[in-house]
Length: 268
Image (cartoon, rainbow, N blue to C red; front, side, top):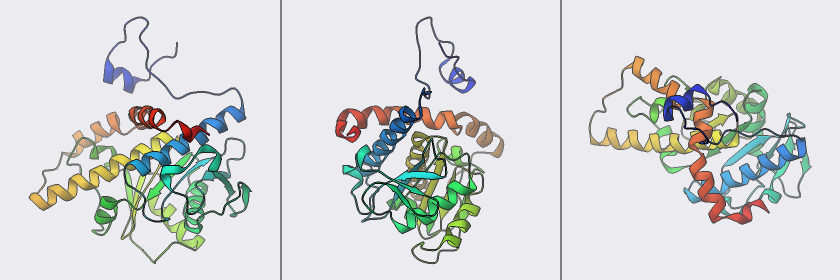
């Protein structure tokens, strides 16, 4: 039996004999790992569709290929999040060459994600969409404040890209987005939306979902009055509890269970 990481031990306490919790899987073959990543990616798109993050043809989630880490799997251009299956995903390298699949890649997806993955070797997955509250909050050009426990996951761990120049079509702008992201888990793209990264698809997708909700919470709080901030020391402690790679992966598990039960065709 695997030893539970300290973060989970702190959350649930010592487990009785025979009681276990799910942990990120390991793989015996590249093919097995690739299949898992593609299924996770398809599930992530279904969740984005379920949460209403679609906006026309905008938005993309990517995951590195385990055999060729300079290439990534991504959604085909113009396909509904709510209908994407694992078999629909396309593989693109960092030069934009289509390596697998029969539909084109969104140019903005290639420009942004290729530069993010190149700048962040640790980022297995990245997620971006034009979600409603993320768009609204991004127009303010300010960071998320530590006003809730969930928002503390991003405390001093997200950047702001404040140089919007229209639809991202050039590699140098993708590089500027990657620079604004730095080694954070997320970046707010001013007048555009949110982008998150993670060591897994589940983590990147969870950070996007909870960041979108944290943007909504701060907008509501600011509209109602003056939000009271959590002090820096407490915010940092809380980030260490809810903002780790494992915490991101684990908090996505209930959503994964729901979407794989309701949309079993995503595995096709």
